[in-house]
Image 1: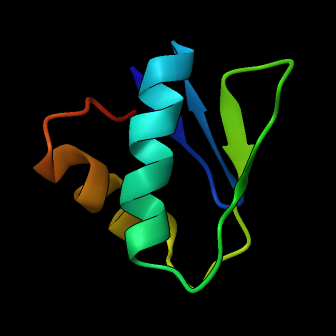
Image 2 (image 1 turned 120 degrees about the vertical axis):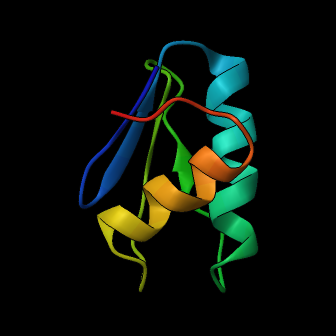
Length: 64
């Protein structure tokens, strides 16, 4: 399960975080940073929470 917030995305696994990050990056002009101590990455973006959830859901990732 991936939790999408306004300024970060939290994932259950590091692998999910990498996949989710790649999807979000494709819609952005720069790369968000995955935090090494947690499976999440910070997002400074022009996308809103609903758009990020939509993009992740399109590839079968379950979002909360």
